[in-house]
Length: 96
Ligand SMILES: O=C(O)C[C@H]1C=CC(=O)O1
View 1 (tube, rainbow, N blue to C red):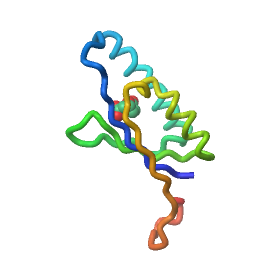
View 2 (cartoon, helix red, strand yellow; view 1 turned 60 degrees about the vertical axis):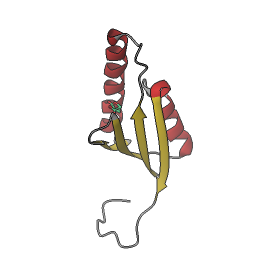
View 3 (cartoon, rainbow, N blue to C red; view 1 turned 90 degrees about the horizontal axis):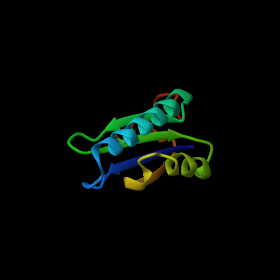
């Protein structure tokens, strides 16, 4: 199942820079592992914001919840999720 996930990161200004750097490094490793597994299919920066638009390819809602809930930055994010399905006018055969 495909989902569009939008994440906006809102780190507390009082968080020490070293702690923020640790969480961001853990987030990067986690995100890159999921991309290599094919579960985090697209990751785009929203220009001008500390936010991203992502496409996840997971088994079901429960797997998406587990993945997103385990993001190291999850406690500091606003997350919105939209389920996706194939558009009837889509021409790419290798995408569903
Ligand atoms: O930077 C972000 O958008 C937040 C998060 C998503 C992937 C990652 O490495 O950090």
